[in-house]
Image (tube, rainbow, N blue to C red; front, side, top):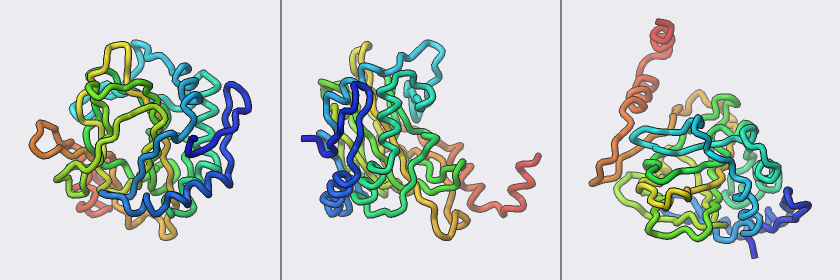
Length: 277
């Protein structure tokens, strides 16, 4: 039975029950909070597999003019936000993942109160990585600039039926000091991974995807935020920070590191003056 039960209102719409979501999240809280290397959980059969197969059938085509990430740290990775998606099932599902029942589930699971779903789906939505692509190990951006919110939790849901181990594509969770991989999670259909997004929550899909050309690695990503009582003035602002794995040829993102150093150490008045010139 799925972790979260859905009500099939039509062939295109599913709905979650708020009370059931709160109960399910609370039952898993201790397991989540005690997880290593940072609070997280891997849940099989998160949502009904038939629902996800129906959504996978609606997945948008990657047209030749569609932009994607193509650099050392992330390659052949595509994203779609709801406004890019024309099919009703996927749009409705993305909206349901941002609705109150899901937010209450995430709150009960993580113990983080007053979570806020992102109506803009910044960096979230549908994710697809093609053969030959990868996503280096990283910690996520921490500030939602449009709403001045602090990012707290990621939810990833996989839509890959019959995914083979030799195709790679595992999500890796690394120790907070980046010395050791602690967990590898194959992206199988119906599996969800939920984790806290702190500045040292290092994760990624660093091994090059080796699936057949007609296949790709697909997931749905949702991010949840809070509004700190004291605001964001004392919060270090970070874009996505990539870290090389020990003993590999992974390349660090030196431009981002330089930008963070400048923002942290150059006096604000001087920084504003430099940006004007």
